Image 1 (tube, one colour):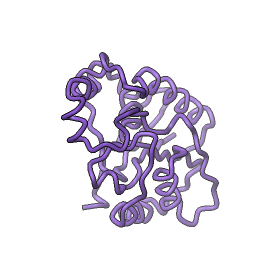
Image 2 (cartoon, rainbow, N blue to C red):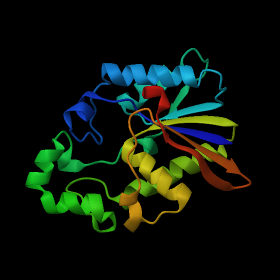
Image 3 (cartoon, rainbow, N blue to C red):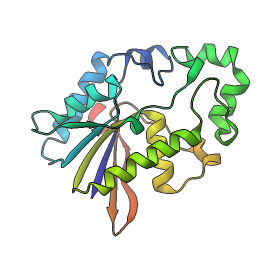
Image 4 (cartoon, helix red, strand yellow):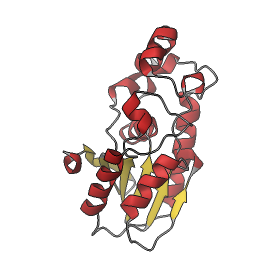
Length: 200
């Protein structure tokens, strides 16, 4: 089994430097084009299942990558982005000014992070793990998963067994970056990580 794990395309808020979390903004023209390029790159792969976060930016990306395949997109709540609470919609530079200590903890000491009306990393990890377990249990040879930056970081942490106190060492990939995780005899490993040749 291979899991093709992809971050949604660039959005208007990504471009503006705003945190999205559970809120949404639309894909930019570049985000759409990069998803189309990735769709063309993956056009010969038969996907048994396509899973997506229920958030519009992820679903829109999944639809573009799906192309003309006659397959439903299955939305899983557990694949949505981490909830940032009061930070959602704010520019990162403003968060740094107003919540500097909490934001520094979020970035560099995630095991100590306490969100302000948001979601803890423990809550994120629990739902992402449930979603991964469900996806894997359904079987198939090639599975497409479209999710979000921090959600994919959580998946990476689980697959590579990176503890939460080292979570900051995992990068947030660019929009439509391609990750491929291969599962053989119960062992999971990445064979492609953060690949972006289709957008360069």
